[in-house]
Amino acid sequence: MSMIGYPLGILIGVITGYVFMLFFQTVIASSKVKFSTIMKVSTQLLAMPTFWFGGPWITTKFLQSVNFAESLPGYLVSLTLTFLLLVSWPLSRFVISVGNQVGKAQRRKK
Image 1 (tube, rainbow, N blue to C red):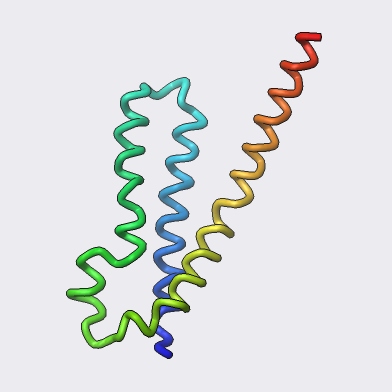
Image 2 (cartoon, helix red, strand yellow):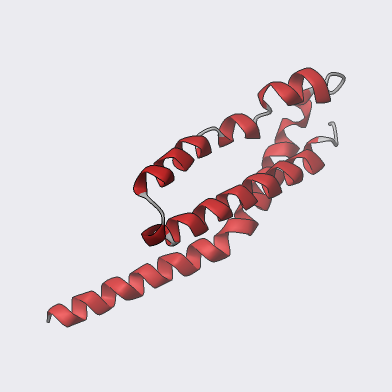
């Protein structure tokens, strides 16, 4: 099994986790940002899976001599864990905050 998958997964996980965090902060501050701007950024985020699985730069330039099929399991595990470690705390805090706001709104109705 090729060991290049683990560090590559960590690198791509950190990059995409950071990009997701920037997007998440923009959405939270959306009262100051136009909806059309958020939608433009959202469509760019749909390209993340292409970036995750290499796109043209990894397979044609960077890893020509590496068997990517052999590295895929380690890559996917390290990518998934790195990405989830970066985004799980802010996302969980956001979900709790939204739940608290909904709960307060429900109590005011009664």
